Amino acid sequence: MAESTTQQRRAGWDKPELDLSKADWQSSSQGAGDVQIAFVEGFIAMRNATKPGSPSLIFNPAEWRAFVLNARDGAFDLT
Image (cartoon, rainbow, N blue to C red):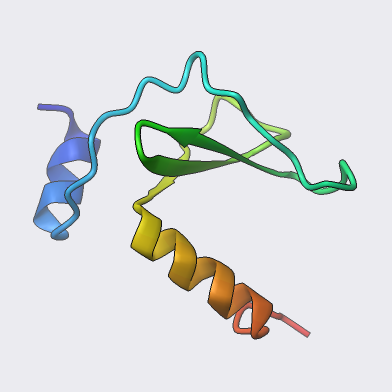
């Protein structure tokens, strides 16, 4: 078992190892920003567009919904 998978299981995550090699990565509607997302096998993957080979964050639908709602509410604003 890969180390990252072991760490995920210890943290209580139940996320599969997704094959992201053929994922349809999408940027924001304006085409700006460094974040891309892809919908793969019922999960949402997020990556840094400037470093596509770096690890991706994987969200289940409930986690994604919570992330989007909190982002809309300004929970992640750093100003």
